[in-house]
Length: 311
Length: 311
Image (cartoon, rainbow over all chains, first blue to last red; front, side, top):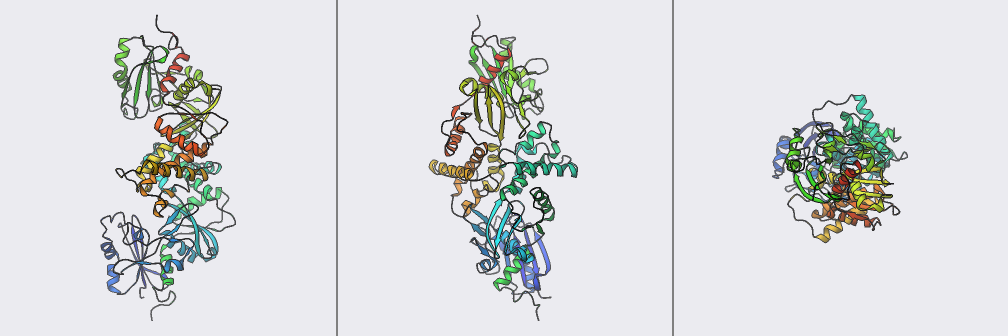
């Protein structure tokens, strides 16, 4: 089997590399704690050599394509944001090469209105997910939960707009650095699964009935102080508040197909919250970045033909 | 002049003591970094002796009254929350004595619905502010900005309900621990006053037009990345987003008199944001805790008569 592409998912805190064959099949992969934050010294070439050098020496001329924060101003080379609407073809014609042409980098996507927004790395996930679920490409919405959750609207195969919710990061900083984490410090016993789930759904319901978290966050503390919630359940309630408020603000529309893209456990948590909003038919895709990089490489003509193997 | 009361504002991170004479006039005061967090070992009696021992030995029998987190479960003695509606008379008849009766502690106030909420220490500020601005006691709203901002509704001299907004704490944790603080690290040059104020009001306007910060927070980063905001202005914009969202959620009503209670610089910042919502007639009171403690002590009969001096 002849490899066709080195695909890199190169983010803030980690670097993942995949050796892809015909049809984008994963032949080999590697992971390193060499995200751009760890490479503050800027030894991107060294990190690339460590993770993919052996592949590139064995198969000279193998193209390499990366997505993620490696294309930011703090990365190896800045790949300027493309404006919405942006399709895989737009990305494929706007790749930026690092000095020496060893690697091409996918641009991020930006929208300027109504609320300014940027993504970098998620665009590869979006086009990978659409390749796996082409029925959504015509009209749909993709939800990529995580540190900075994205809700991405697609039409005719292009990203037409998106929103960012800092849900994962908000939860992390509130748990670790605010008074809301005091009742459930690290190492404290977790509630039973049933109690945790009930507290989570209670937070979702409060957020759904509210009009923003501003006046609700403190209830994660006040409920405990007034005897309405066990201390160990306060973080599940807080998680429900934050995820519920994200969904409230994003206003999922029953008429627009929704696709959840990401870690299965996190997607399952979102699916439970979505059900409280009456959204029960969201599809799920676990991993889509590699598929997206393969698809962009195909459109860009980096790989001869996605469908045929070497002669 | 004979002292009548030792008044203590004993919170999480500091202890303030006031020696009060007739009419609640401040005869002497002291401050110590002996909040209940610093006294984790629990030497509350020692801290009380250090700050007020000399007064109490010189004037034996001088009553002492405290408000704040000293009455929490982590404090010297737990002074259980009173339910809303709660007036100064309700607080005065529910004081809790520390073992040995050296000190009486004002209870906090709780509401259970619609959103569970608690306050501890702010109730003294509220009744102090109402003593200074009695025209609001019949019907009004008090805004106490800060780490956990409170919006307190009063009617017929009693607290009938209140909301808590973690605006100050949210700003602090987002600045220090989230990606939103990256563009303006500690020590970076601040924007000009005019640029900072413009960015602040821009954040207020965005929050006013929005329906919660969930989908807006990330714009404090995206605006910089898309060239719409200088990096040094991002924290002023974020402050405007958070304060603006607090005001949006609190829905100040032009027909209900509003009183700002607290640090003058912070109150001025809120006044600028309130003006963007069309609220331009809010009154201000800088310091009200001591007045509130004096008033509660008078109602409780701890001081013979607030109006007459000793014979």
